[in-house]
Image 1: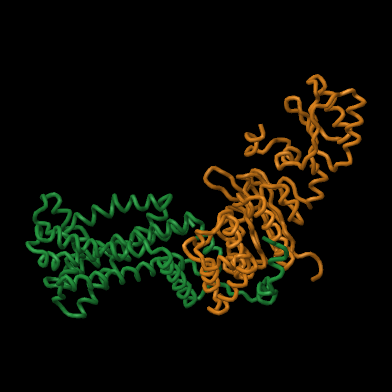
Image 2: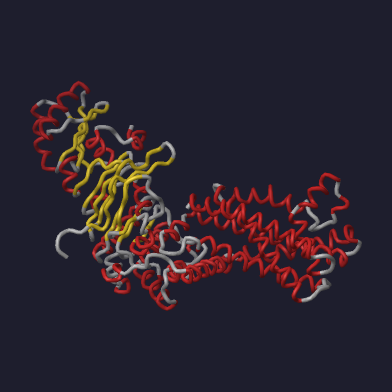
Length: 320
Length: 282
């Protein structure tokens, strides 16, 4: 297909819950066949946006289309094209894995043999064959999440919403889920993924929109965002508190960013580890004795700080 | 546990639907499809019973136990003899059991909402009424089953129908229509209550006293005057009287018509409220 096509387009999407403004005019453009990451802290409006796009909520303002169909006026068409996997596994716990998938197949017009073979195929693809005939309530958290994802694939959607697909999973299951998302993306489905984890968006998404308080505060490819915000965070704690200004000056000179000072630790976003020699040299030249020097991946909190100049409220308490 | 290429290795996924299919989507759900989806969801509710046998006890053993206890423990004292009481109480116990079963509709709906299963259903291209209608259809099926069991055990204990098969069918129809009307109120409760436990509490606080302050189990004559006044107007009394008339003997037409008026009024008030709350909640 020539040119770029968009599977999801939103314009000025607004949603209020009483006094709370959950979405304050969101514009999104998700390219067909891409993985789009919606990154933000709890309460930023990610789930609200997904629920509107999945026709579960009606927007109070603006509009959105999925594959060219309006999510309000052509909701039935949108539902035929989309699949949703939420934060919580939304499957019937009393039924078996097979029964859950067959139910969805039958509901969406598949014949019994088709529904059965498709359920079997999906269970195999998600390594649930052994548990196929067990009630879902006996599944582990990771297994439930995989079944939930399988359930959203029964209808072979062209657009898949994954609302925090790895929240609450252990690192191993998280890695599994990442592999699955990559596999799905390779089949040509368009994926809209919400996450609180910068690393997850970085690993999976072709493009990211960072949202905070119901507004998009930055968009771009992971590389673009990292160039703007620094993918890594360098923190230096001098042995003597009196050296803090000297450390700040050294970091500012190397990173060309305004370092943040908390107690006696100075932190600054950096683009890559190649700045380390320069930092060490400058600290040495300034005669600073260093008690601690670390380079680590930036947290979402730090990306927020760089993008907005304020820490995200949600993370403020835990960061202190 | 290996994960490599799990999804990619499965040609069965045929992923995703093609451009052509996507270009020819149906704009709405047809009525026949909607009915089929309702049946699929009713099937799902009934399959749950297979996996959760405790529920079977809930809607079959419990009414039988009620029937046995009332007949043999209270029967002699209330009705002179267990058999005399059985002839009086069985129609009432059928009504009581049907009313209590509507609680299952409400707790089931409430559980689906709480667990997010409703979100899954609503994200699918199915009729909007199917999840609600499927739940109610399944519970009507359970009602019919419990009704058959109660009459079956009643027969074994000596209960005899004093009318004709047509009247028995009319009795079954009346009790099913009545509980359907009450179901609307329970659906409303399910939508407003935060969780299934709260729905249960409602059942005990409201359904229990309404059911017992009627002539389902005892004649109203021995009740104090103020309670008699209420008990005589209580729809549970009217339905029980109609059931007695249809199954045993006595006037059936008047209480049946009055019951149906209640049914109509209940449905007119609660069906729209329930559907509105349902649309808002989900």
